[in-house]
Length: 453
Image (cartoon, rainbow, N blue to C red; front, side):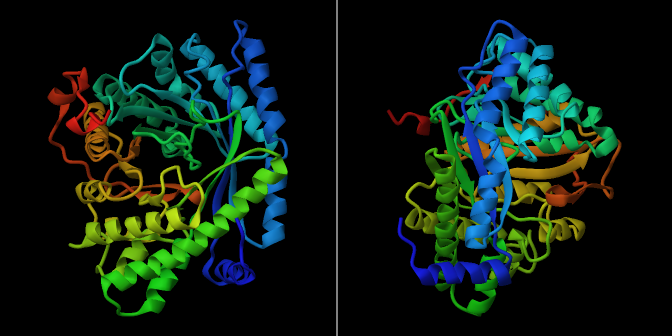
């Protein structure tokens, strides 16, 4: 891919003035050849392989940062969903795997390693059940390990048995990490239609169709898009869509340039650019502020979902034109705790959980970093997950839930993690129950749109 000199200059302007950065360069590593009947040998194989490919990951990313003057916020690793190569393990042994992953991540200098995961949209093996049961223990005994479970897909439907299991795991994780605002739940995502090349944690994993090792990049840049919208002034919506597309095109070009540079230093294949606008707790680095700049009074106002749909569509169109390989999730993230405008909308009473759910039908992913009262029932958490899965399955898109039933907290309280995870107000969950529905168990069949063969 060729880059013109003026493109580089414009990118430097975005970096210096508009706080643009590359959100993550994520090294995907297959662990499918690390299984052994002896657990200690398995752990050593895992550690050695992550060190083999990852020992210079931070160094190479820093070199590319210095070369182009564009910050890379996060350097991370994703691995094969561990329930696949290690399906023979029990829950206690899976926790031992989590601990060696944590050590490997620490030793190569990264903040998170993702892929403590299972794909159970159609059913569960014994090993996958053990993995899900181990999640609260693994997340409470490690700092850097992130976990995910895919419970639904358009092709398979929704595995309500798995949804109920992960809801119980979420509640237990909240209790086990109660001394730090139930932070373990912030490292766990429940998916429908999970992407195999997603570079963003906590939901990243190295899919089974991926190569031995690969480098994926996740861009960001909500601040750049916000400034472009403000500079455009009062134009009509079709013109505004063009402004967004042109801006995201430039961001994507920069993202691919950075990703390919890091991959080249590694001597490994470059995978995809995930064209996602991902907010941070910093002022001006907000999806909510973009929606307000587009014209809604506050996030949650009538028109919010339409504005988000237009933003998401414009981001995807620009990414497709700018990159040779777009993948991952690609769109606009709407996490509550990581976005100051979203937090303020909740505090003002303008953004409810139900409105947020409606917005997830047109954005990238779903209910993200949503804190709810600690006494929210397991069944209602399962119902929230099932609702998001239904949106993903029916619309043939990725949806997800990263929900934090903050132990001992209620509406009016906050969870506060600092850094990228930010601070979130506890959102109200309706007291009416969906228990009788989710307790039926079984699987919600795939929709008619799954019949595409």
